[in-house]
Image (cartoon, rainbow, N blue to C red; front, side, top):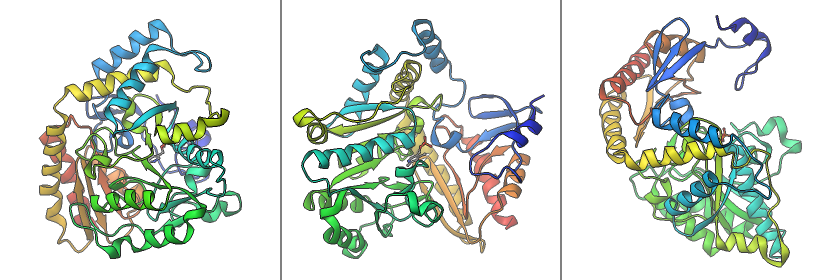
Length: 422
Ligand SMILES: *Cc1c(COP(=O)(O)O)cnc(C)c1O
């Protein structure tokens, strides 16, 4: 028996109270798109374990990659030493990511990749003798992680700023783009970010944004023209552009990287989540030669080095996962998921409890009128044989790419049924 009583007494789960914890469901195994609970209930995973498990659980090729790497070495420090999985992963990332991103810092989690990106941007300007360019310009509705610097560029209202305001760097924020994905972007849409840059560019090191899809800050999909315009604005006002593709990377939006929708290249790029196909924690921050030369000239060194950076097991798994993705018909799978999601989810748009429906790539979102009770929703979805975890007013899924039409149908059915209960 999995000791859930011990769990509720001693273990923190994400964003929970230790006095009144929400119930957690004991999982004994997982395979393909199924999570199996201890009591034998099988749940179709609509969350891909937070965007990451793109090939499904217990994939033979990923399992094999880990076993093989384990025989060579599980870990070795990256200071003064290097290894094949780290090199081959970096080679692949340089090749696949948008042009000119040539330098790779391999770290251990998404939030750290964002910290690294922010540090790179800051160090770049310090080493140019322009240390006053120290602030970040972010978008409302953004989510970039939970560590302090990452938190300081999350939406100031939903991003916990009020709790930590005395110990967090103060940054600038532009309104979130209102122009929807697939639609043009007007001058009006760019007004806020343009005026922030105009007024504050001498203090701004970089703009940081999630290209095309704002994830955990609101599941919002915005126009590619906005992204193109922001790239131009960054050049015009001489600030760097950081693209956080931790959620969107590796095919989720229908392109390998969401920047491709706008054919732009950021100065710094963050990757994580699906990087290892969901198997373990690994992240990467890439930058172009402008940034790396700027940091490194006159004897400069980049000041970061986590103990477990470029862990060989994680690198070998990431390498196998990316190759598996490239060898699979992922564009077609994501396209099919997108089509089915829009056909099936759009049917609830007229429902009085529903405010908006959005689909892009392998992401489907129903925005409700009212906040959803997480405990009730979770019990409902488990009883329907699916794993869907809403937040706020958002009911959303981003399933593994290997999901069948029928399994995806079970997910969308459960979502539609839930909206009717509200
Ligand atoms: C999840 C996420 C992060 C943080 O990654 P962790 O691995 O949870 O630290 C940062 N940015 C975006 C866009 C994310 O979706």
